[in-house]
Image (tube, rainbow, N blue to C red; front, side):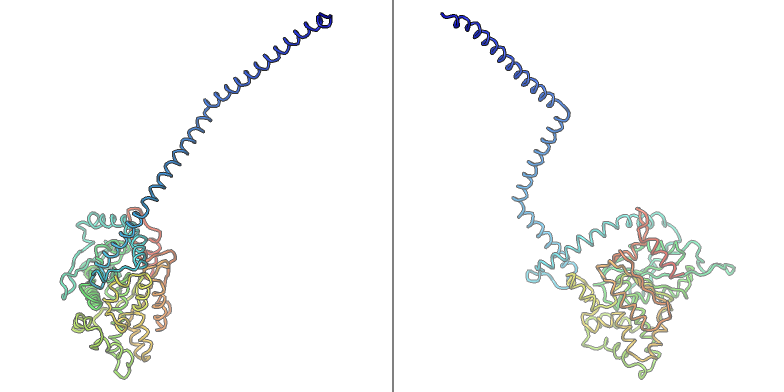
Length: 483
């Protein structure tokens, strides 16, 4: 062995030991690092933030599974769901047609047009049903007032007969507390109060004085004697039967209101929707008849010929046979003087409103056309706006006479958001009445923004939820007009 070999061996052994120590250090460091990371991971897992992350992950996973399951369920059952919805829509439409439709439903007459089905259901679900639901608090307030507040009170006299031709038709009278009832004593100097006769609406086929109890309650609180009659509705009668009832209710009011503290010289006629149409029609027809009676034939050419056509045998025979004789055997000029008239959301042009009904898809279930005689001529005769326009076409003498028999002042109210009867109906009547050159300020039109069809009347009713957004505004408007 050479010296170099002898000297190199210890050196090699030392170097080997050094490498071993270095390797052990590296292994230890690596192990320590891994252990440290493992501890950090364990700590992270045990931290609240990690728990929250896991919960979110689990929740998201659950949602994903749920949505996937729901999606698969809907996709699988979608045809059945669509079929069920369409079936319900058709069944509802057929039910409405069977109740109000003008023709007898058979397999060949069932309405099948999808657009008509959609239009009718849209009215049912987006207008009629929500409106009825919103009226529940008003209905509860009505029941409370009629059954509790006024129970046994002399301020509400119910079911007074007024109609000798139809004894079943009665009216209710609302008497203010401070009214001069039964004419009082000779020393009673309390003034007689204004009288409001309210004619409710209901598409000429429904309605009841009981439903409008709160109208009587509000006017009673304002200090007005209020009369609300029931009247004939379709299919029990046609438009002239309805006019006949309103005329007799006004005659009864003129004869009897003083006994309840009312002033017969300050009678106000108020109507809503179909009731506004009937109120305006009754007054305009009465004015025309009185004017024709006072004028000679030579002085009246247009109106006398126009009114005579309603008796022509070619004009809606059923219409004439059922109704004409009932109006003709009464004195048409016997209405009391109507001091003022309030018309709310009314139909004043039958032909124009029929076109609006066609756009809405309800003309086949609306009774309006049947009630008005189903001919363009009877549509015109039963349209207040058209009748006023006919007055304007006649002689100035007859215009003056007819104008003299109209109410002293007229307030026309409509909602700008009325989809049932567009406000243009009131605008046109207002324009026609203005053309008669009534006294300045005697004819007023008020179109309220954001107000729908029922609001001019329902909006003034009290509710268990408290007064509505239009309540005080309407009460102030009507009180200012009447007082």
